[in-house]
Image (cartoon, rainbow, N blue to C red; front, side, top):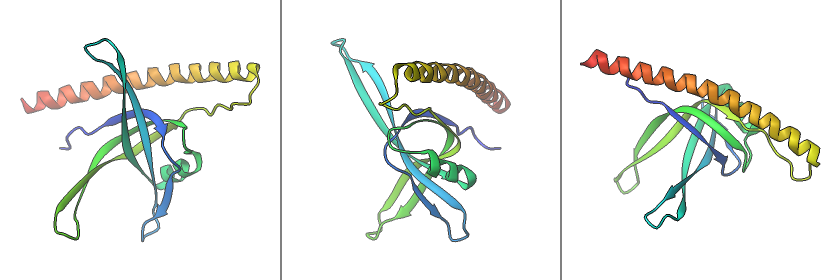
Length: 156
């Protein structure tokens, strides 16, 4: 039985994606995402915490990411963690954790030269999309929590 390994991230693409193919011709797209989190410390002052994550997308998803990802674009990623292990030339063991994307949603692009009417329309579309996405992810989160509880119950 597989253990639970699921990640949901929402952030912004850091740089243009790197599209390649394996020796057998399978497309792979690599890109990085920045996730911002605000925290409060003892003094009550908010402080920004930024984390960067490397993402790998494979197959048709890789093609879609290569086409739609661009620096600064917002994305929501559902995937799993994968640990890569190797030895460097000095014989030291190295590891790196990447996120293998299983589903990627691209947030709408906003243009800076849009008129006020276009801005209002884009914001309303974004808000509607966000509400629908939030409901879908709430259902996903409930299903994941229930599956986890069933796994724990099966062990004990």
